[in-house]
Length: 241
Image (cartoon, rainbow, N blue to C red):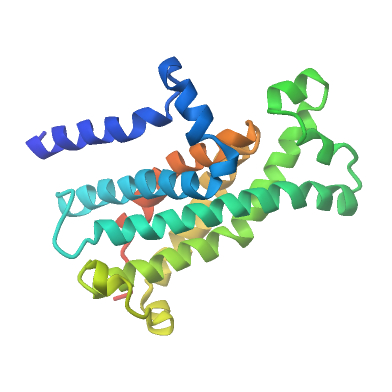
């Protein structure tokens, strides 16, 4: 291991520690980190830190360094922070709407009510654990089929934009050429791996677990999963050849 690896591990631990369930952090987490009234800032912060960390790890895997000229650390944090806000919105919308859809279109009673329990354990104690798991699966599946591809594609478009502008903050705030950047995406990788493999075999199962836990922890879990997403999206070739 290099010296930079030890430094990164130290930084990683410092960033991740506030999100872990340590008793001495309970008040901070309750009052701020998991505070639903502060959801915009906390969602931005969680993804800006954790998902960007995933991209940094991806760069280390791909290029052997944690930072390099043109990487654009701050622009990437801004993008992930914005995506974190949209992810929180998606969680609320799909968690509210999908159970109603299941009851109305699949005639399964009690699915919507199962989401009123704090988590799957509380639902299971009341005899609705199966319905909570079914609801969590459908929420995850529908969200990942409809929202995730749009989010991942938007990330790739901004990724190309950041690279084109040399990773500078000034360049980042210049106009994004969505049409050209969309054409430059490596669709063989984006469709063949990111969409076809990671969504059904990783994201849907993992976010089924996410929607089985208490709502205040969902974005935090998603942010930790964002580390994985950051690695996947950064290791995958950005442009088509």
